[in-house]
Length: 132
Image (tube, rainbow, N blue to C red; front, side, top):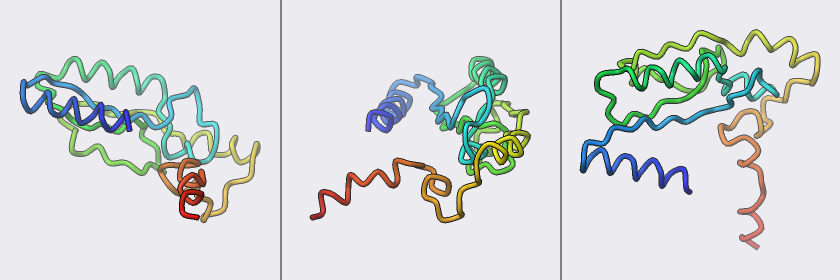
């Protein structure tokens, strides 16, 4: 909830006062992906640094939502709407797939931890308990 509130507050300050803010939704920023789900969400440190540089260099930022992920072949997110920022990630988590496959079995296609963007949070069970 605090994440949503922060984005809404930044948007309001932009609308009311023109304060520019980048709303970056970072997927998984680690030296390399730690599981198969991160093949979609991973952002390399180099791509992260380049994104931050671009945010401060663009002449007019506005209040864009930018998905923080490298140029992953399995990515879920689309940043075409913020192309004006000039950020073009270079790295791709796909180079780690064979290593991950050797370390752990790929998840089945119906595994909520792998197929839903919320990962394990989608199956935490907290909502089901309140129904009974």
